[in-house]
Length: 468
Image 1 (cartoon, helix red, strand yellow):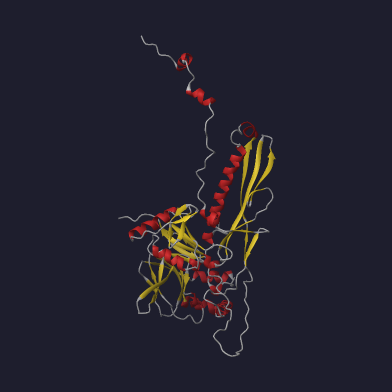
Image 2 (cartoon, rainbow, N blue to C red):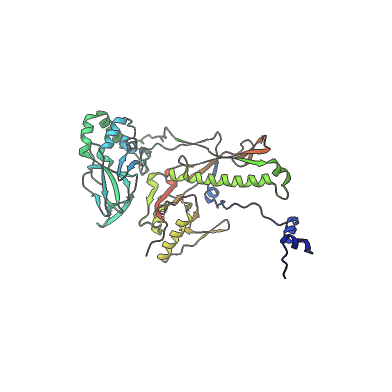
């Protein structure tokens, strides 16, 4: 007959200390609390940070005549799209026109066209007879090369417009041929549909005429008011006077804010502070989370985030979907002294695949002891804050940084009250009736693009693998 002993009985006859009891008495070697959400934060590390006294940074620029070249937005209902009337003010001729009733009447005259890939929308040399708004899709701008061959000189995508000279009396001819690359949805305003509205509304005609006259003022190739300079002359000719005009309404960046309220029970702070200070560890992880939010805002914030503040003329589209060496070369060519790219890790992997297909193996660069992938010697830093859409597309940014370089800069303010780290403070809020200690943790930051070509974006970057 076998007698089975219970667990409690086995404990009573054990002759040595059990491991469970020993673990309770042993002093273990332990790590600090770990946090998986901490990323490399390359953008924060590589941006030069500028002290902003007073909490506001003003970007003064030379006066430019090409204001209003914004992205046109639409309302999409099922398979139909219509332009938002106020969004027509993004067209240069309508920038200062605020008659909402007339804008609504103008918006109603746009006609929708759904086009297949390869459709020629406009042909070079033909009269400009309509205004085109791109709702969705990609289109190539094609011109004739030096020897008569066809060359691609640019692309149009969702939110872009073309042919807006059709609003004026002398519209001229199409400077390039427009051809769809993908399935495309356009809104078109024929000149014939515009004429009755111009006849009935003299104020609209006057506004368009005034805008065209202003656009004819001397400009340089960046759209800035020109500075008259004489050179190569002999003798004592009369020199023309000039002055450098400034933008009368410069952009001002107010520092953004991220905050968190840290709570710690006094029992934890009193009894469990050895060997690690509980409040310090809680504060360390809270600050890390705030810094992650700061980097996310520097990329995605609607007000000052870099993806939302790239000039439309500095946004380009991939040639075939995946990011190729040709795409990055075009992005590099759009600015001087590009200091680094910023891309989602999946975009970096997709670029590596495209290089491998071509037998190209770019050399990485060494940055502070880290081997970082690069193209043409320009490092490509990973940034998980750049989102990847449901259609597996993302964006790649190219930046020139620093105030002296007229680049992109980070904004913060040091020396604030109760400062714990630069531009971050921790304020003790007291102990409540439930013995909870509270600390208010605040971080102040923003970013500014000093001139438009300091930041460029490659859009519609496909990161998924192509099916065989």
